[in-house]
Amino acid sequence: MKGEFFFEWGYHRDSYSRSTIHFEDHKTGDYDFTLHNAKASDKPDWDHFFHTPLTVPQYVLSGGYFFNDKHDLGIEICWNHLKYVVNDNQTMHLTGEINERHFDQDTLVTPNFVHFEHTNGNNYLMISLLKRMQIVHSRDENHVLSANFRLGGGGLVPKTDSYIMGMHNDGPFRLSGYVIGVGAALRYDVFRYLFLQFGVKGSWANYTDAKLYGYGRAQHSFFSAQYILSAGFNIPTKGYKLRPTI
Image 1 (tube, rainbow, N blue to C red):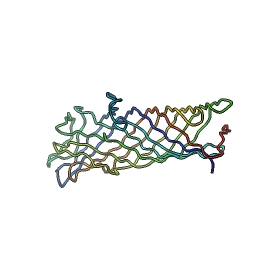
Image 2: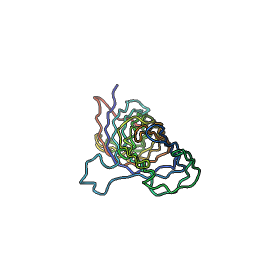
Image 3: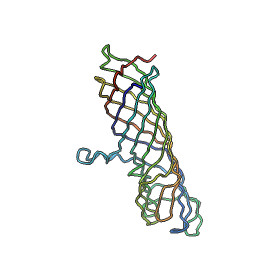
Image 4: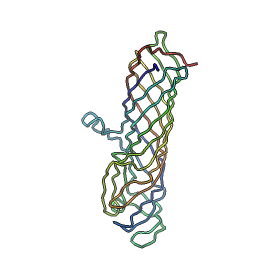
């Protein structure tokens, strides 16, 4: 089948919904408690953008293929490197047990008690279906503006960094849950081979088994919104011809 391959690289900012986080360890610790309505932020790491490796800031890397049919459908494999940090020193409602003591109260959560983040990172490994709809193109088809839509899902592969009552754990990278998401973008293709794209992506991430110190585990879920600016290049297969969307 004739069509075009594409590869894309970009950076983004993110926002997160509040979440309920459950922490549990009955072997290397003695706790089973939940923090309710936790607020978290991203960590763009743009302060020294031109003096740090490309993979330090929050980035997106994807590759895919658009099939040459009148519906302009495609498929994409994408690695979204987000960073998720539960804000320190916020008051949350604490329920559960710690060292055989029961809690059901509002609590100021300091880093000495709990610090929890997925900063290397809150990684989404996703496969998505794509739909491209042309908005306008030049007569010679060297300039094309289109709207792209995606729907996909996959796995969460974080490197979780946590402090639970002084017990520190950092990593390893591991499959810790699943994610589903939808997205939309405006894409400008120039001279057939290069493109710029601005998109938004909404995802639901469900962490079912985030690793803590020893046998500790955390579970939580949240919605994320990404605002992505990216660039890429196309590799048309032989005989490919752009067709207006009907």
